[in-house]
Image (cartoon, rainbow, N blue to C red):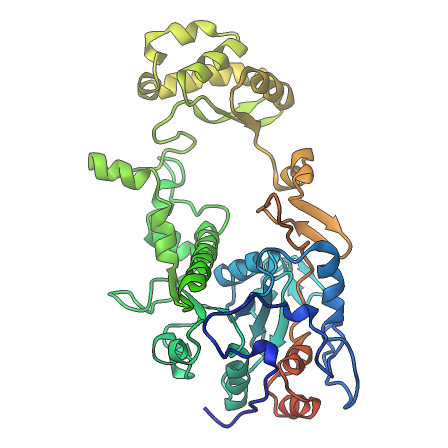
Length: 459
C-alpha cells in the first residue's frame, strides 16, 4: 500500500478496544470544514469555510430519533443485494452507514426499468440503499486504498461481498491484517459458497443458490418445471442473518472488547430455510417433490379461484377445518371419516380441494374473507403488489411510506421504546465524498488533490 494521508478526526480514532458510548458523527460540530449535501455535486469547500458537518442529515435525525444503533459506524463495501440490504437495515435503526462505491457505481443502479433520478439509478438500487451516505473510491489505486484504511480506523462494522481474496490482495484481509490492526472491528463477509471447501470462492447469485440449494426443485407444479421464487429470497435471508450476526458480534464486543469475523454465505442462507423439506427427508428418506399449491404436510392450505380472483385458505387444525366447511355450507364434511384429521385430509387432498373449490368459486373474495375471518379461519385474497402496499393495514403499520421525498417500503422492525429513522432516499453516487473525508480530518486541499488524481472517478 502506497503512502497516504494519515490525518484523522478524533471521532473516528480507534485507540482502544472497549469504548464508551459515543455521539454519532452526524451530530458532531467540531470540524472546521465541511460541505453541504446536495445532488451529487460534491466539491471541496474553500479553505476557511465553516459549515456544520452534514447538517442536511442532522435535521432529519434530530427530528425523528436516531435509533438503538446510534453511534455505530458501518462501512458498506458491498454491492447488489444481500450486503446493501443488511447495511440498510442497520441504517434504519440509527447506524451511520457510509456506502463506498466504485467510480463505475454499483451495477444495480442500471437494473431497470423502472428508473428514478433522471434515469441515473434504478428503483431496484434505490430500494436497497436508502438512509446511507455515499462516497466514491477507486480501490484499485494506492490512494483509494489509503483512504479506505483511514475510514477503517474509525469503523465499528465492515460489510463486504468482494470475490474471495480481493480484500487480502489489497492488504485488508481480516485474519492477517485487520483483526490485529483494529481489534474491535466487526467484519461481515458475505459470499456465495464461502472462501474454502470444494466450492469455496465461486460466485453466487440468488437464483444460482435457489438452484444449488434445492429450493427451486420444490417450487412449482408436479407436471411443470422448477420455478424460481418470485423474490430474491436467498439474498434477503442472508441479509437478515448477517444483521443478526453483526448484532451478536457487537453484543459480544461489549463483553470482551473484541470484534470478530462473520462468515455469511448464500449457501448457509438457502440450506437454513428448507423447512420442513429437509426435516421430512431426514425422517422419511423420501425426496421432496413439487406440490404446486398443496402444502407438503397440511391440507387444506392452498389457493382457490373465487368469483373475482384468487383466494388462499388455510385450515391447519380440526377446529379450523370445521369452521371452514360450516362457513361454506358443507358442514357434513367435518364428520366425514375421510377428512377427520389432517392425516386423513392429506390422504384425500385432491378430492377435498375439488369439493372446497366448487364452493369457494361461488363467493367474492372480500365477502368470503370477512366471513372466514369472523369464523377464525386464516384466509386472504391473493393480492397484487399494489393492492398489498396500499392496503389499510399496511398503511397503518407504516410499511408503505409517502413522506416528503421518500416513497417506498417502511421499516419492518418496531421497538416499543426505541424509535427508528424514517427512510431517506438513496444518495447520488459520490454525493458525500468530500463531507465524509473532511469529517475524518482531510483538509480541502488533500480532497481536491485526490479528486484531480481520479481517486473518486467522475463523482
